[in-house]
Length: 113
Length: 114
Image (cartoon, rainbow over all chains, first blue to last red; front, side, top):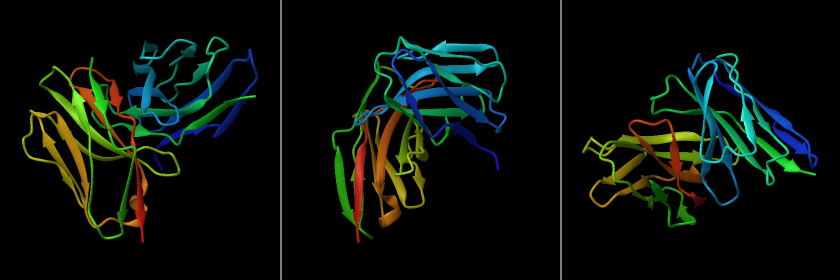
C-alpha cells in the first residue's frame, strides 16, 4: 500500500537534546511538508521541500532543521534551540509542488521530559 | 497576509440530521483554493472537500457540500445525514494559487449524538 509513514508515534525529549522525527513516503511525490499542531490550533508550516536537495522555511522554522537527500525521505530534527517543542507533528506530501491535494501521515506526538 | 477564521470551537448534531460548519477567510488575491479537512481521533488529516475560487459552482462530495460565497469570503461546510463516524475536528484551509503553503483555521470539534 502506498502512503506516508511517520515514526515514532510518540517521542520524548530531554532538555538540551536534539531529536529526529522520521517521514517516509512511497507515493513517488515530489513535494514534502512538515506541520506542527498545538492544542486548540490549526496546523502551522515548519519546512517544505519541492525537490530533492532543496527545502524552504515555513512560518515557524526557528529551532528546527530538515534534510531531503532522497525523494522518499524528509526527516525533521527538533533542536535544543526549540524552547517549546511539545506538539503534534504531521508530515505531508503532494505529487507536485503546486498540487492542491496533500496526503498526510499519522503524526508524531513529541513531549518534553 | 491571509487568515482563516473558524468561529465555532464546538458543534453538535444528532445522527441523520444536517449540520453546517462556518469558515471565513481574508485575502486580497483572486485565485486560490479552499479546503475542508477532517481530523478524527486517530489524528490523521483527511481531505473532505476542496473548492477552486474561480469556480462558481459549489463543490459536493457525497454527503458533504460547501457554500462558497467569494464576495463575502465565506466557505461553510454542510454535512447531510450525519453519521457517528463524522465526529472529528474539522479544519478549514486556504492556499494561494502560487504557493505551497496551506493556512489553517483553528478548527471546529463536531460531536454526533445517536
